[in-house]
Length: 424
Image 1 (tube, helix red, strand yellow):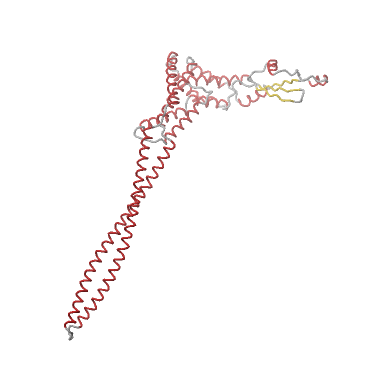
Image 2 (tube, rainbow, N blue to C red):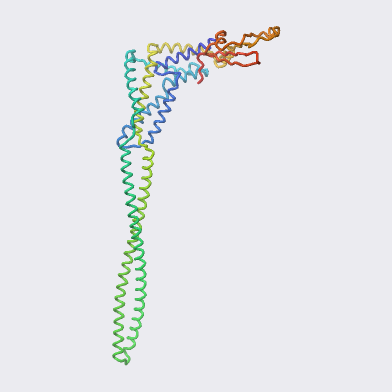
């Protein structure tokens, strides 16, 4: 049973060595966390404002983050953790061979042509750069004051524009009211002139008919002269009235044309006012929220800070195993994998069950010693926690469950815990 645990420890140790040579630590979950942060930054940048000034940096940053996203999705830590999962599930060597080969290749690449002196020098440089970037990210004001100033000026422009629009709309409304009054008066005048012309026309027709009928009759000259004079006056009045009607109708048409033009202008100004009002609302919201952070610059600095931290961690991991031969580790890993028990899960469960021990203690001595002997229990006087641990040699890594049976005895169950108990 002990060999099973030893085999698990060996597999874990060998995988851990290869992962460290690649610059990572299989006991951490850095890849998943970094992948999550990378995706979050990509999502933020997809909604970032694009301007002439930041377009180039924004495009480059998005491209870099996509490359990093692909890297975190399949690096040494991910492969190492996947191998340990495969081991725990009982996978055969042939099914994980490609993963082991990939991990060994990454391990060899991780420390290829790497010297201890370089790690030392590079670590000092990175620590300095890391502290400077960390200080900048914590204290630097990433507010885009140019953009804020532009929005402030644009707000002022829109407010003046809206004021001007309101004044013009007010003036148009007054002019429209005036034109409606003029139009109403002109319509009334036109109608009256038309009625007057119709009356004159009827009277003239009657006089013309009378005049025609008196041509062959004996009518007094003064009567005939008076008739002709009246007819002539009516003709002049009708002609003058027709001319006045035409002018009045032309004026009415002009008034109506101006009114329609003002209504169209009013519609255009109303639409412009709606657009300006919406823009002003958006700018006021931005100014109220003070949302003018230069997100691109900040993410670039945070990204560089993370890169410095990750490289420091990578160098630290590589420093521990710089002289380890990855190919020999591969040979040992293959050997241990092929020697692993076939049914690991069942054997490990049995091993844990067999590792349990029970010890009973007694707080006070009981009066009936014969009954105590028949039960064949181990009893000890209640002691302090430190004495109890010291007497029973309990490892600090074991789980201790204390269950009270009655007022006099306490049963202590000790469950041994494997040093490497991986649960993925």
